[in-house]
Length: 551
Image (cartoon, rainbow, N blue to C red; front, side, top):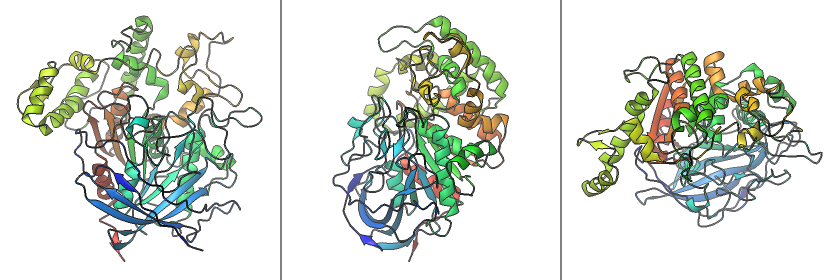
């Protein structure tokens, strides 16, 4: 039976913003949409019910002030596995536009945006959503909230704004650094189908005191969500061969991992355990914002990038440790044998030339785009305040040292990800059922300060690292079923991670022959998404989708 419950929500977002120019802030939702009826596959059939939707209407206002009224069908909290560990997280929402600006549309063959809200490798749930973009972080009905997790989320609140974001984050991120709903709303207004999956995450604990959301739970769940969608071809509207994932921070990492690891057999056992649908988990394209990935090498990459920058207190981190890790980065980078992007003029990327590569390929073009978009007076003011930068009227140039000084304080201490005292979120991500936090690098374990009896990583860690690292599927075991289209974005002032992490990903994907669209946002921090309209346009281009058809 169809239920009609129409409410209006005014949403102010940017459409068609130019990369490198900050055009989008927070998203303000001024009224609640009516709650839709849940459509769960509790009988284990994993068959999508096309009739079990609620009809909602939302208004999307673009940066030119034009309002777009979108009526859509909303399916809520569908459990996507037959043997869920926790259905509060292992469920998804589906939104399908049926009318845009008064014109009926047919989204049966539209691209499908699979947008996760994962941040910090924390759990995410769609159980309490009242409409599109309502995924929440950390909690959910029926699930055990992780220790230290937020009880509410920026994206879950109908009055979400930049002020509710993670400290220092762009207005498009939620309280744990995951993406808010900008991409979803723009996709809906463009006529695309939007699927929002929940997923288990670190810190979840059952009644027996066992942790059940640590690695590889998040990627296994997202793969299962993809399998559910693909197994329901012809029932779920949209083209299941044109699924585009999107995520920010840790969500960007797992979005990337989805694309790199398509149908890899190393996940089969885990997918079988939760009753995932018997279908492919391949996706067509990847959207990743500030992806925090390649975790076993992330400490080394971070020190190469930010090792000489002081903390916000003005204190320098332990330079002996920093230098050790920089040496490790040099060894790792040499083994990768990556080449610079086409047209960059760079051959093999090494620790010695990576600073110049980042400057010429990303940083200076980003600054150039930013400065060119300013008015003459604003540009003059900016240049007066930032004397490290030279502007010849057409192009910005500067040194790597000047750039590091401009960015200023590093966010994380050393090591940034595998902390000697096991205090980092990633230590929690690699915990076991009975141990909350564990080391996942040999260097971290060898220098442990918590009093562990062994100074080695536990025996299951190498396998977990392969399950969680897209570079494993792009370098060590090149996956022929991977996504061939990559949208990657990072803010130049983002010190949550190293700039080489996304640059390595982009280089490897292009070296393999894939299409890569990789830009850095000038003066933006972690979670920035200043060109969401361009992302929506890119989806149409790479998927070959023209526009939503009129009925």
